Structures are given as C-alpha cells and as structure tokens.
Amino acid sequence: MRCLARTAMLAAALSACTVAALPTATAATAATSGAEHQRPRTERVSVAADGAEGNAESYTAGISADGRFATFRSVATNLTPGTRGGVNLFIKDLRSGAVEQANVASDGTPADDSSFDIALSADGRYAVFDSRAGNLSPDKRPGDTDLFVRDRTTGRTELLLENTQQQAGTSYEPAVSADGRFVAFTSDRTDLVPGPSTDPVAVYVRDRWNGTTQRVSVRSDGSQAGTRSAAPVISADGSKVGFLSLGGLGEGEPAGSAAAAGLAKPRLSTFYVHDMRTGRTESAARQRDGSDAGASDIRLSPDGRYALFTTRSSDVVPGKTTQTSDVYARDLRTGTTQRLSLAHDGSEARGDSRGPVMSADNRKVFFTSTAPNLVPGGTTGGHQAVYARDLRTGSVERLDVAAGGTPADGESTGVATDGPGRTAVFTSSAGNLVPGDTNKADDVFLRRLP
Image 1: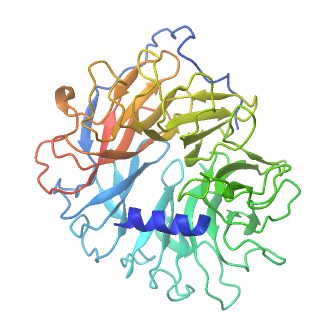
Image 2: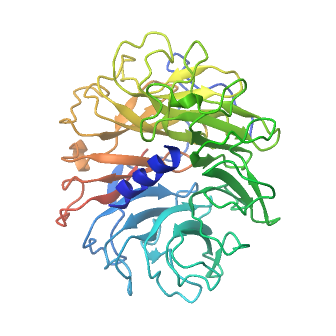
C-alpha cells in the first residue's frame, strides 16, 4: 500500500488574516445563525461517476477549501476509462459526481507509473502531485519522482521544477497555497537554489508566478543545519510553512538535537514553522519548560496562526494524566498551547488521538481517535474513528457513522476538511457506512455536517 511506502519514505527522509484567540468550551456559545443547514449524511467518494464501486482500495482523502472537490489515491482500475495499474490520483466533483484521473499528461494520457501525493488549490483549479511516471512531461528524468502541476481549466500538465542539471534527485510531498501560487515540497536535489547544500533532504517553496525556489528548512539567519527535513504543510496565503526535521534549526539548538530519546522514532521529530515574510524559524511543538515535545501528523490552521500536531508527551499542557497520544494547537502569536482531543464533558480521551485539521474559522477541529469516551455512549471497538470537536461549545461528534448514527464497523483514518468545516472526508475499511459497499476494500467517504 502506498500509505506504507510513504511512511517508509518519510522515515528515511527524517533518519493571513487576524482572528480572535482559539475558541474554548468555556466561551459563551454563539447565537444560532439564520444560515440554512444541510442534513448530516455519509456518502462514499471513491466510486465511478455512475456509482460503481472501486475494484480495489482507495485511501488518503483530501478536499478543496471550497468543499467542491475531493481527492484520493487508488489502485482501482475502473473509476475512469483507460486507467492503468499502480497507484493513481483521482478528483471527485462532489456537486456533479464526475470523476477524473489527475495524474495525466496534457493530452489526457494516463500516467505510466505510480503517483503518490496530491494537493489542490482552494478552488480546485490547480492539482499539484508527485509521480514516477515518465510520460507526463518530455522534460522529466527517467526513474525519478518529480512534481507536476495540472491546470484543470486549461488541461495542461507541466513539471513544477526544471531539471537544470543531469543528476538524479527526487521531489515529493507537495502542499499548495490557496491561490496555487506557492508550492512547498521535500527534495534531495542539490540544484534547486544557489550555493552548496549540506542538508541531505530539505523543504523548499516554489513561487510559480515568479519562477523562484527558496529553501525554507533553515535557521532564522538562513543557515543550514546539515539535517533532514520533510513533511511540509503551508498556510492558505503561503506565508507560513511547517515541516518536520531532525532538529538544529531553532534558536540555540545544536544540530541534530532532535535525536534525543523518543525523537528518533519514525515520523516523530521536531515541528518547525518558517515565516516566509520575516525569515524566522521556530519550533512549534513544545513542552511547558520550552523543550521539544516531538511531533507527528503536523498541520497549520488555514490562517497560519495555529500549529497543529500529535504527540505522546505528558507535559505539553497541565493536567495530562494519560499515557496516550493527544492532538494540540499552539498559538504562534501568543505561544500558548491547547489540548484539542478532549471528550464531550471535557475529560481526557482514554485512547490515542492523532491527525488534527482545523476549519478556516478556527472553531472546529477534526481528528481520529481510539478513545471510547469522546461522545456519550461511544465505543470504537478498538478501531480508530473520526471525530469533530467544536472548540467553542465543547461538543464532540463522531463522523464515521451510517444513516441513523450506526458506528463504522472498521478502522477510519486520515480526516480532512473543507474551509467552513461542513464537509469532512476520510478513509475507512468499514463496510456498513453506505448501502452496497461490497468490495471489501478501504474506501474514501465524506460526512456532511449541519
């Protein structure tokens, strides 16, 4: 499965608007607006335009900020005509039901090799993805994983980066700003910026309008730490970029400081945020004494104010008594951190929580958890389940449910949300979320929230 391959790749790579403070459950509940509410429902996304279910697994759900387009990976070959084998990327129009393969050449020819990660601009026009395919651009080096941009309005697919030297190198893990201008990514290439590179793997940002590339996994003075960085995330306006690194990039940190006990685990490292406007790089997952907490599953809120992460550290906030992983938000403006993975009554989650994402108004947080106590009468059967928590009211809702609220009978992972926080997408192995799910494979689903 590609999700396992991506974990292995990441492990190898690692061996602006002004808003009020993050709402809390102690704040007064907002008055009910007069806006029309949609009815909650669950739908399967990873099906063909005619509703036929995929003949193999689909996973790694994503959604555009405007909520119209969902993305996913799949090894199914019957979702669109002409799909070849391997891992392919698909975009589903949630309004019309149309499905298109994203990793195709400008003439519509499907990729001749696997593709892995995809990111959409806010309106879904630009799809940025990585692929090993050799038939998507005549300028691609054979065998390397490269980044491509597909303009879904013009139908043009092109390389994001020019191959300025005849050398091997891979670029992958794209994250894109809302307007499609800035693309953050991971690369081991040494020809992307002027001067020598001491980092074996680094995080960069490409300005598609100006045709420039900048290394962002650097110290605040612009120097490199000679370490490995990966897993970039980007704010909607492109002004903030977060990433994981083996350390040495924060103020006063020695190179490799994140190799301390507990930080050398796969997918667990130091979470940094680089400010593209000021050049400052700061650690974003800290314990109360200011030391690094070790993080995974990193995200930024769309406005770039909050750094979201998962950690098992017991001293990020006061009052943690469990030995489980929790999800947190650090306010990059005030330096305060809040635990997000709490039950409906404010008690601690009695199970591991991970993978936080936040709505554009910073009011709702979405995450997965094995905790059985997040909702009244809840149970997960030991599986991960998907939840939404309203940070203003403290209410928690389980999302991987069928009609009538029946919980998923399988594992649900990897939640993403649109800007308003009214549509969430996720992967699930459950077979009871929608009628007619008989393929006995992971599928991608959405949950409409009121």
